[in-house]
Image (tube, rainbow over all chains, first blue to last red; front, side, top):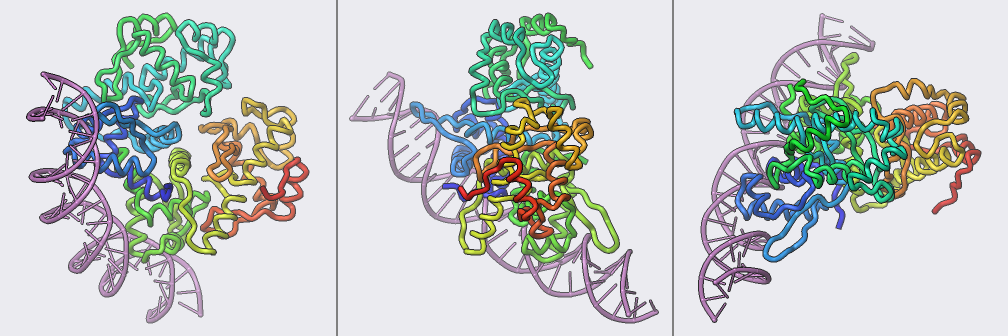
Length: 227
Length: 227
DNA sequence: CGCACGGTGCGGCCGCGGCCGAAGCGTGAC
DNA sequence: GTCACGCTTCGGCCGCGGCCGCACCGTGCG
């Protein structure tokens, strides 16, 4: 099954169409083949071929549901690899006004595989430390545990998962750390759940900060003033 | 300078010749263009072209010395990305006896970008925790600080560097964690310095455990009996 | 000095792989 | 049952890029 070495997995990511698909899937949710064809800008047949290769390479997995086939990132290791890769691949230059707007919204709030990133991500990271919900060693304090429980986050469940619990991750737009790991994934999901953020589109990593979220961040002591 | 997006950096890694070059460079030291041509199995001109692309993509950097040009991994971010990629790209199947021997020695002791990995890597990781030189939070204890100083490791200097200090990293041959991060890099260098390990070849990641190292690991309580 | 050597640039060959259109298959709607 | 739709498979076209040989440049040696 696994004849994949460094080169072949790199080649899988190295195709522009597949890279766009993977980038969309880094939003964390499963997307249908047709949606992925659209974001990649190719026909359905071509997309199907790409997805077949990604599947064979173990980068994505598929779940059939009705007459749709939903693809998603295969596991945390894949997400972390793509995340690490994007750290050495800063954003491409802007060409159109539309792209400029999209880039700005991505820089403000987005998902990074399965957790929050962008300006809001680093602000939240800083706030969690400033409020001492997290220690410098990135462990949850008793106060943090209680506060996160109020958000609907099960800290102990996150701790039990087989991936790093909480760690800093250098944000490539802010060049400062945001929070990554199992806890970060749960916190991000909880905040979307509580309506702080809404996804701009099902197949995009871009998030929109709601008024609720804006108030919540202010309560945490975050300074949302531009730059 | 940076027009590199996810796809182009993936494509850089995706070529078999370039992947072999990068894998060799993951040994942590700078290698001359000719050596890299040899490990890649291509002519000098082809290798030069590859290295030019890797250079333009920011994956390697070059230092001219005499009539040689030495290439090395550009920075920690690149090393971490390659490391993360290799986690989703388990080793390719064995075809020859020579490869089998090489695979076995790699599984026993090797460098993973700039720190120790393989069976010896995870044994050392376990020993550092068992001896309580490292806490569960992967911070160095006072006892550990003294012991590491005796090895010639400057713990405080490692703490100051702009990369993660010490963290677990899942070993893909042992499927158990070894130690990664700035501290791990210094510890690995110190142990090679003290003659516990020697590099099997300048352009390989494979290490050989010396008698000195074998005794040292035993003193730490490591069980070196095979499997 | 001249030669050997390491490394790079260029021209040309060639094969891998991305792309599409058409056809086939299974699922769900009516 | 019949049709529509989502997705995959197959065949064929074509362009990108890896490969080499050769020429060129700079360095170091005798």
